Image (tube, rainbow, N blue to C red; front, side):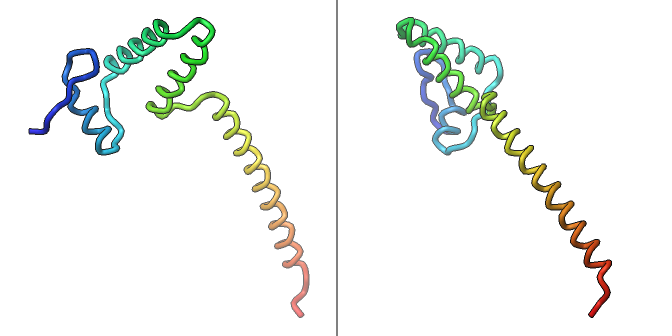
Length: 111
């Protein structure tokens, strides 16, 4: 049986998160534990931060959680959407140009 390490401050045993982190695999955590841990971290951020740093700390905390959950922030999503729209427009232009060149080549008599 693999050894488990105590979970920070909770007094619970955390086998899977420890081994997932050690081996570099994403760790499947149940949703309830995930929400509890997020709540604990937010409470910790509220306790330890001055009011001026609260927004910055919460944003960093949430961005870290979003990263763990494979979520993206809206700004990153919008940038990728604009890049995709530009690429699709360029692809449509190139396809039209190829069709035009093929039509011209078909109209020319062979030499």
